[in-house]
Amino acid sequence: MAKPSARFVCQACGAVTAKWAGRCEACGEWNTVVEEPLEARPGASGKSALRKVAFVGLGGSAPPPPRRPTGIAELDRVLGGGLVPASALLVGGDPGIGKSTLLLQAAASVARDGGRVIYITGEESVEQIRMRGRRLGLADAGIGLAAAINVRDIAASLETAADAALVVIDSIQTMWLDSVESAPGTVGQVRACSFELIRLAKSKGFAVALVGHVTKEGAIAGPRVLEHMVDAVLYFEGDRGHQFRILRGVKNRFGATDEIGVFEMTEGGLAEVPNPSALFLAERRGNVAGSAVFAGVEGTRPVLVEVQALLAPNPGGSPRRAVIGWDGGRLAMMLAVLETRGGLRLAASDVYLNVAGGLRLAEPAVDLAVAAALASAAFDTPTRADTVFFGEIGLSGEIRQVAHAEARLKEAAKLGFGHACLPRRVARGNRPFPSVEGIGLEEIGHISDLMARFGDRNG
Image (cartoon, rainbow, N blue to C red):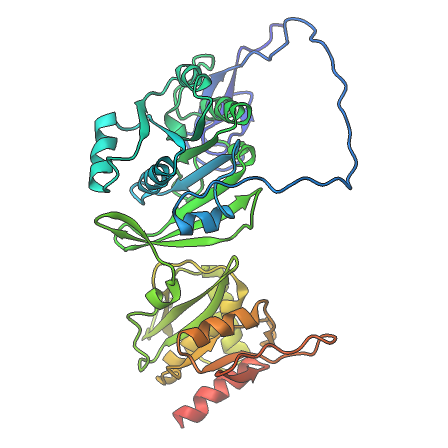
């Protein structure tokens, strides 16, 4: 029986099947299964020489990798201190969010610092990149530009660029390798092109930055193996109608993960925001019911943001639950806890929750701030204007401890807050309780204590 010469691959998740189907059985997407020819395995035609693998002990040590600062402090923070030579970086985000602008600004800064930078675009022409550079005031930066999609041509050109410090590929979904018989952007092409470019970066010692498109769910398009191949994965988040942009690191082999950098989109490009807490709270009004300030931590950075809640009467039908910047399932759980454990009746009200500023929160410590905002809206009583909230809420209504309490309190004190509502502290060994001068602490052990706090003020 002849061996099959082709296979069927889902372009959404990379699943491989023996026959075509209208719907992928792995991810459930429709019309994403495409026929791709089988790639010839290297060494399949004959036996290759075998070499033994050398093993070393676990107790060895190595110096930390060298760093090349990009000149953009917020980007360096997310990267862990700068670019690492011979590393691969993947930057994903929605169309028009500012990925190319950020990398062009970083490339210009590296070039002005004396490093050789090559910028290869597969989506735009060289003149379009020049126009963007002139608009950003980067025309004098010594960047080598090229418009190409053939990876073999690109690799041949980079072979002679031994002194390159940074190579930007915009974007990986437009690259094409002639040994893979499929269209650019397919799973096979993205995987093969990425492997070839990363291999070249490792052998030549330059850092390569790959721009990646994202799907409608927000994940980087192409095979998931792409995120495993690179050394760092950054997501550029935000709304194109909003001036704030969040650069979030979700993977970093040379630094901390879940670190964020905050930028503001201006006419002159992306501007760094060294103090995002002040920017997120700049338009806050402290005398409005349904608002609470959350003292959060993103990576190693404490950030203060405003959580807003609005309750609207819904006398009949199914009440609506809408949330922006937080997990909808977590909101549903929080409403159930407030009704069951706190006695707050919300079944006849539409609930709207918003995290002001465009930041998306994921840590459980925001539970107490959300509960405070909902209670404030329900009792029509504003929270204290100088109060921050943080703490996790369990299903039984208890307020649980969270990490980095002292860092949260210091950030609140720096911005002029004088009061904090936090979980009841429990002594752990000989470690002292976190305390910051100038901030009064109000410890809450159960959600009913929070409801009584608003009930007393309302009465």
